[in-house]
Length: 279
Image (cartoon, rainbow, N blue to C red; front, side, top):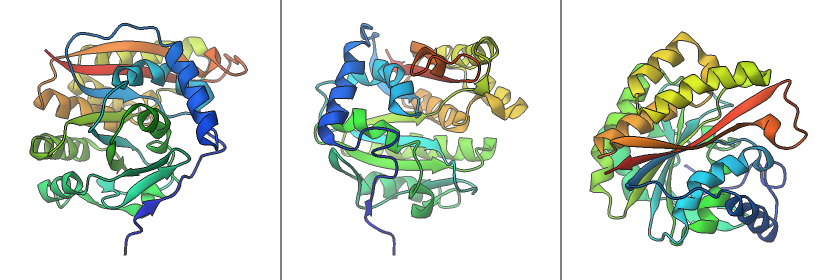
């Protein structure tokens, strides 16, 4: 039987291990976000998932748009770093836990997603056990959103067929939800290139996101997997967001890991925060 409470895997390492320390760090990044809210209804976000000290300043630019929100279900779509599988694996019951408390699963929406495509979208709790890509979104979400619910979804091989299946299922299931829904694609960009190389590679993906061009981004990912570790989740969320009314995107911030921490620009990871918006 599936466990009901997913315990934190990276609290105390990738982000602080106490609630007070999490809030202090998150508020520091939110205070530095500084961007004005883009016009339009927020349908989705693209957000990074590295250690908080590295990607937190970038992630804050997107999550700052949620301050004061309540009664929201967030569908988190990210890559599986530890387990290889086809399709999308959901944690469909119970809750996700961090030092900030527990965020319950929107079990009705999770069930609707699996019913929309029983071949590609299944319960897969094992893939979630040690995964950080979704957990790293929770410090922001739990701090900012009251009455938060989640639908955690991990993608395995991220093929075009799997991306399209998840996007179609999201477009079908989300309108049936009883609560407002936000889609979040969790992805870092290029990994461990010198900053000038990484920044040139990342600029291509950032431009695809800015133009809401999911087809070009999918083709780019098929040409090279080095562009983004969660490229499939980005494409699936972009496609689903467009089907749900999004017509434009706003890139809120791009940076690399050399902009934080030890400021080592010799081998960096790229991060982007973007909002997918309906008029």
